[in-house]
Length: 172
Image (cartoon, rainbow, N blue to C red; front, side):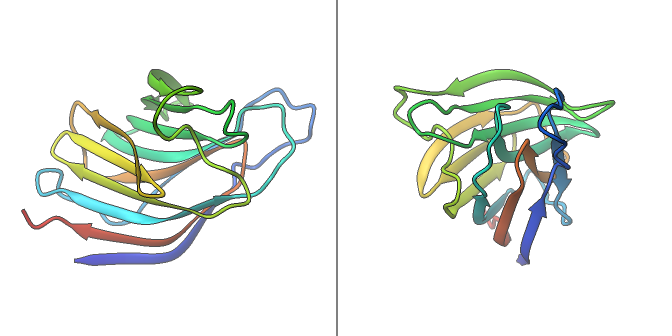
């Protein structure tokens, strides 16, 4: 089964330069999936070059309970310094991220994404684990405490476009 959307643009309403607050947004994708059956979501991810002193991230959110889940945040910027973070993300009453693991300089895996370049992604979700691939390179495998069947896309301090979205329910 395939459900698709041409593109979803996430813009976390950036404020003027002197603003000290991070601006985050999460959009939950429409169709739910059966966590025991599993799902594959793929598409493209693209951000624009922006001048900012705040860290910029784009990524994915896998809901474990209403307003709480696991997030994968891919830092945008210079490959020499950027990181990818995985951790618990609470959306209520406001965005609160607790990092559980990270990849960064010197790691032999994906450490974020380039701005002004279209990247492909593939997210495999089954039972209580998921794998994320960026440009066909494994970013990481991670285990969750359980899933509701809802997946979202995330942005922090940068507008992000997720395009060519496709979803397949696994047939195992």
